[in-house]
Image (tube, rainbow, N blue to C red; front, top):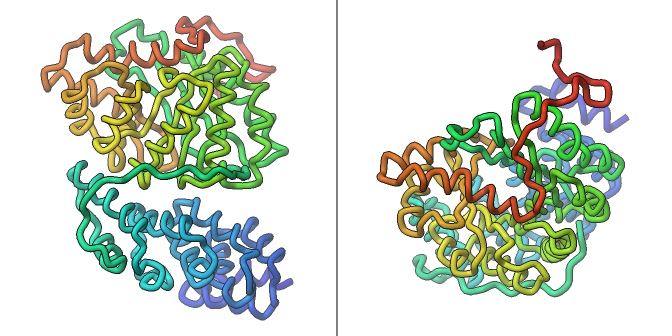
Length: 454
């Protein structure tokens, strides 16, 4: 009964009092860890936040830490802030807490909302190093450094941002953990300016379809990019291909461990042209294990790998990524290191890997920075991708990069190489890239998928 009262608290108490009412309901019910986990997993964002706020009073030990970790994997800034309350401050280990603080700076959560910040940041040299690197990355991108960064850096007692990261050691032990449904990236590589070449061939290559989030749904959802989506794309003259993998963020969620067991049966399918996205998000032991396992799967299946470098602590993440790749059975020249920027491109290029850049309206790279990198490092083995995912994105950013390249003096051949020939060459390493689009059958498993259209 109390769970029903929790669900209707917003309607009964109004928005000004609903949060306090939910926490009071949880207290009055004496909810244990199992009940709190159930409410969190089934609840709305408001109910989840109430669970996080109630944890210090209802769970004396670290048993509810998986809920905090889950909230920190989301991009809901209210959940991130609630996760960094007193319970998180007490039970998150140093690595988790540092990455959580960096995520606050990355997503705009005020550090005032981080409980016990002064104590935990004091004399933390590794946190200072991460903050320094993030400041350097923002400066290189000609973006403002958050004022909160300077505040946290001052708490560490190390002063002003100075030098880039040293390599970060990889944890030797790891246990897998899986995906969160609202954090699934959905990248698309588009031909962009290369549209002039046989426009009905290879118009869009869907290159990263994230793994599903519940064990019982795995077979059905993993079938979509390799079976249903090629049929849908062919109706519009698009040669659809995909990569399949356990995404690094979801590698931290124990519910998705089954993804790794399911992957081999899908990696053999004709239009799967790489293993990816794999790599790092928060550089945890679980991510270490998932990355190593999937690099081995790529080698076993004769596929290249699309590797995600972390959005936070990027240079350390790149170095850790390259260390794992070098230890694997997959040659570096069969790896595309994605989400690069000004601070990571040189070391990635020196490694011999392919270089990937994501162009977004507000985050990651933009057209001007991308063209500046192309001018400095050249177009060889460079891939530029746009996105159509959960955040603000623009699939036509690749086209805009091509237009700006021409305006800045690059040749048509340069544009064609970056936006067409390089992607074809990399994904062609799979031996499965088929650019001709055969006329589709009238139906797919009895379904036209036309939704009333002609």
